[in-house]
Amino acid sequence: MNVQATLPLENFIQAVQSQLDKAQSAMAVKARNLNLPMTFAIKDINLDLRAHVEFSAGEIRIRPAGANEGEASVFHIVFTAITRPMIEENAAALSADPEDQPLDMLEQDLTEEERRKLEWVGVRTVGKLRELDRTGSSQEIGRVTNLPVDRLRKALRRATVPLVEDVTPVDREHDTPGRLRRIMKVRGRNLTEEGRTPRVTIAGRPAPILKATPGEMLLAPEPDQWAGELRIEAGPDLATAMSFDLSAFAEPASPSASNGAVPEMTTEGTP
Image 1 (cartoon, rainbow, N blue to C red):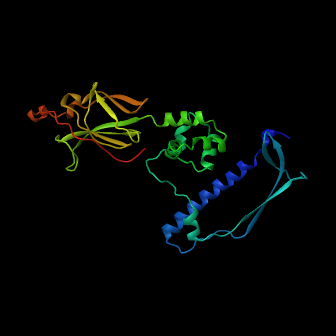
Image 2 (image 1 turned 135 degrees about the vertical axis):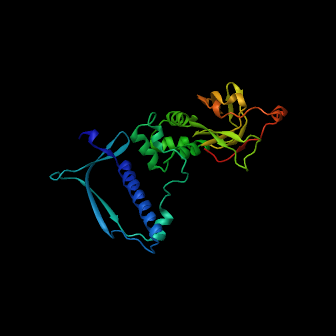
Image 3 (image 1 turned 180 degrees about the horizontal axis):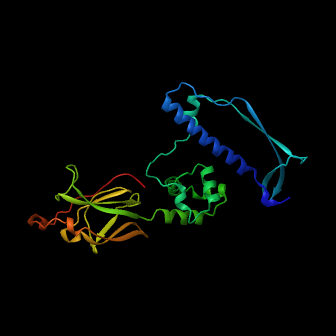
C-alpha cells in the first residue's frame, strides 16, 4: 500500500469536525440574524465510508477504497438535526477579537498542514496561541499536534513583532490628556506587549505617549520631533522603526513647553 495515499485516522476525524464546526457557525449566524426559533438540518443521514486501514509509525492510517476493492473497513457516520439553542451552545464564535491575527500570519514559519492541525485543537488565531504559551500549554499543544514546541514559539515570536502601518497628524480630543492641540497617531500591529510599557523614541529622543493599545498609539512629540526615525520597542527583542516627515504639521514651541511636564500614558487592551 502506498503510505503517501493514506492519512491518520485522527486527521480524518478532526477534518470532519472542523468542517462541521464551520457549518455550525454558519447556522448560528443564520438563526440569530433571522431570529428563527429553530433552524433546519438534514436528519438521520448515514454515511458509510469504505476504507483500508493500516498501522504505520504508531498511527492508524486509512485509505479510501476504490469501487472494486474488497476487504475494506466501513466507517459509519450519522448526521442528525440540531436546534437553535444547541447551535448557540456548541458553536464557536467566529472571532473573539476583531483585531486578532489569523494563523495565516504564521505562514512563513508553519506550513498549511501545521496551521490546520492547530485549528483542529481550537487554536484559530495568533492571540489564542499566545495565550496558551503564556499559560504554559504550548508543550501540550505541541504533543497533540506533533509540532515542535521550539518552532511554535519561534513562529509566535515573529508574529508578535511590532509593525507600523502609518503615522498621521490628528487634532487632540477633549478627553485626551496633554496640552498640544495637534498630536500624532500611529496605527499598526503589536504596538504594545501585555504587562509592559512600550518605549517610543523619535529622532533618538523619547516621545511622550498619551495613549497606547496594540493597534494604535497617540503621541505628543516636541516641535522638532515631527520628522525623523520613529522607533517603538514593545518588549525585549520586539522593536520596529520607520522614517517619516510630518514637519509641516508641527506646532511652534510655546513658553509653557519649558515646564517639562510630560503627560501620563494610558494603556488599553491586550495583544
